[in-house]
Length: 135
Image (cartoon, rainbow, N blue to C red; front, side, top):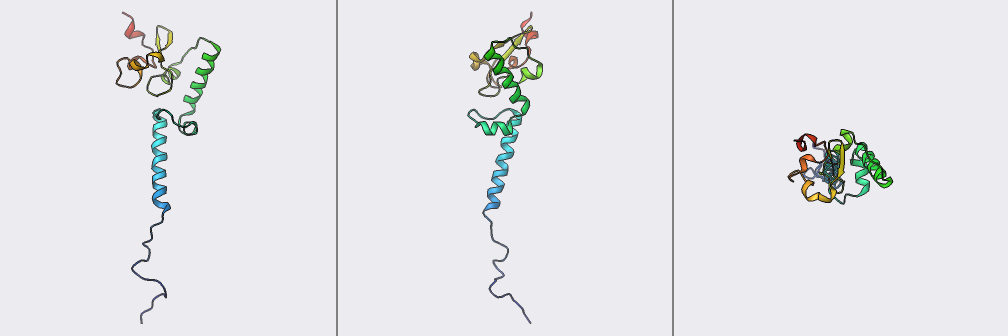
């Protein structure tokens, strides 16, 4: 004999699509993408502060806090290579700093020359450019 469960059809069994599965996949992909952008320092301008807290590395947040506090107190800031790298003109909203022969300059006002990898002077932003300027 044949046996069948009452009320179930063979055609539809196991083929139900759960709404949360595709939503979970999309949310996961977005979280990974935002994480990668944060790690690369390329979160778009206007990114909410709570996303920056999750996805911008702690060292970068600490360096920005150090910079803002020093500028607010009018201190002359001494940059390490790692700290200077944060101000390389590749992230919208961050100051751009250029160092030449031990002197560091905030060149944010000239953002159009330094912001973005394709700009003419971006190679000098966020690093010691002494070798290029000394003749």
